Structures are given as structure tokens and as C-alpha cells.
Image 1 (cartoon, rainbow, N blue to C red):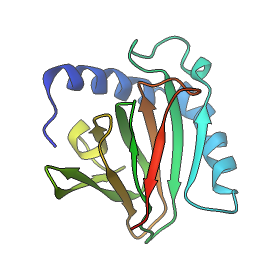
Image 2 (cartoon, one colour):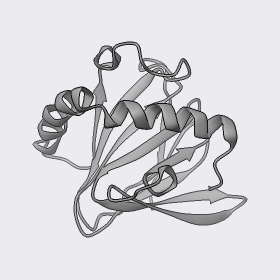
Image 3 (cartoon, rainbow, N blue to C red):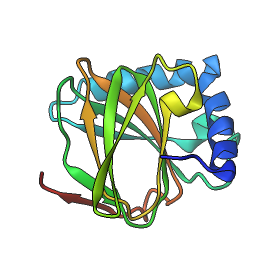
Length: 156
């Protein structure tokens, strides 16, 4: 997907936050806790207070998402939330339904650029995460509030 200028500004701000060693120090235990869950994929909310008020004003929810290696997740959408996702471990593909055509978007933690690591999914857009050959761990930032986000799922 093409990143517009407004979204790129938000992604750049989020990227700087994620690169902060203090933030990663707090995220790593949350990731390890989520990895110990028994059913996958795992979605775990991250307290926004962790980010010390540095988040762009559009961000109201943060989640860790873990998909085991070689796994295709359900098709999902967030009807009231714009999602921005960064790959922090592994790599994966997110297929996005655009004008009735599934478009592939591969992201990797080893990427050097924002475009290689980050993906933006507009609200009410069907998408499907598919992990690569290792566990795929992402941090997602949503515009909807934790108690208001509407997640919908479809079977494959």
C-alpha cells in the first residue's frame, strides 16, 4: 500500500517511539508473557501509560499480536479503527482486500525502512495476517479506544 504524507508522519513518530530502548525494555516482558499463551494467535493490550504521553494524538490503543510460524490467521477487520502495525520479530504477509482484490504486503523486522517494517490498514478494511517461517510478532496501534474497538472476523 502507498503511504500518504500524513500517515508517514504518524508512522515516523511511532517508529521513533518503538526504537526507544526504554520502551522496548517494557515491551519485551509483555511479548514473553503473550508467547506463553496456550491458544494462537495472541492479542494482548499494552497500557498506553507505557509510552509516557509520547504517542500521536490519533492513537488510543496498542496491542501485541503474535502469530506462530507458518500460520494463516482468520480474515479480520476493525470497523471503527485505523490500524498501524510494526513488525518487531520475524516476518509475515498481510493480505488486504482492496476493490475485491487481495493485495499482498510483506513486512519484516529486519527491514531498514518504514515501508519494510510498517503497514497501515484503514478502518473497516478486511485483512489477513500470514506468518513466515518463524513466529511473527507485531505491535499494533489503533485509533479506536480499547473499550470501543470493533473487531470482526471471517473464516478463511
